[in-house]
Length: 497
Image 1: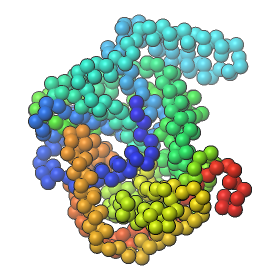
Image 2: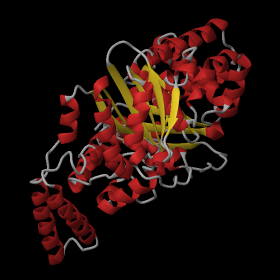
Image 3: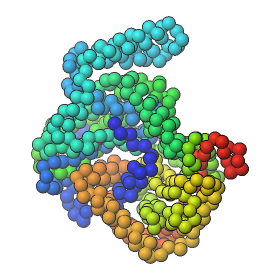
Image 4: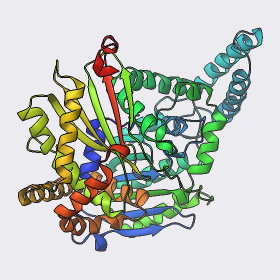
């Protein structure tokens, strides 16, 4: 499954496309349906094509993991595609005890020294039991069943805040979708647990340790946050992943995959009343469970700049980040405008100065990362041209940020930003998939999808004084984290010291 990591394109697209203008009649079109177990659905009937799109958001991301168990939320996302006790099994009565034995052997193996004879025997027994269990499985049965029934956009993502599952299907397959999703939500089946754990470990090696941007952004989070769970990576630390057990995954599922901790949106050619009945028969059968404790983490006050250098055999990169509040704070809206003013398109301030005029960089982008449920980072990333010192690029970038504090902003700049925000969001809501994604995101993260309806008014009310105030408050040296990525052979040069 695709992993939601803090890569520039994906995060920037979400940050731009998400919190903007809602359709004028959206408040009247969205039908809320809450089951007795607490799960909430947002239903929107629209369109003439006989299809619907569905998004399920579980408020269980990397930030919810206990220390020492990083990566478990993402691993659970992988396991969700292994099917259910019916879909994916040739004989569940035979397979189930083998899965229990695999879990027991895995626990015992982890507590046994690797150099011992006992470890070798346990490993052989685990491999043999795993082989027997696999002979009773139908690999990729759930995905193939959905695809045979017309599924498109079938995928899942895990990020710091949420685990999300989404698909588009013909309207007459809505009950099939509900049965499958309710089944795997109610009773996860840990098929191929250790194989999938190895897959996640390999993802970490390839996408974090093997990619310059992965290294840079991981280091940025480590350095920028002191107390926040946004410090650790969604994919997990290698040592934690190697120690994760089946019981760790099932314990996390029991705690966080509660119906009251889950929201979903269904948008498209649906009959609302018939859909309500289907949801009651399927998701409504899942027993209610207590909600997990809400995240309540406060970063300590910052009094000094933080800096770090990642040595990597790649072209240099520069990340300059500032802690910022999250929604629904007024200042979060202002950062939407600041982001576009500085880096959206070739006419943006940083692009004009660093790329077009001074020829210091090949590109400069910005984003809000790594999540939205807690205060997070506004990050500017610059890619210097060959031969341009990082010191020079950083100084030029900071000068432009200082100009923003002075309030020298033309009305045409603000007008351009508002137009772009409206246009991007209109495109986002134009499709069933886009509307289901956006409604479910804000219901899960902001606690109310109606946050969308107020966004245009908020953006329209932002003036130069707001931008100047927010820039002066947050874009400061003591609130700043700078991480450089440079080749090891430059470590002895003055710039790297």
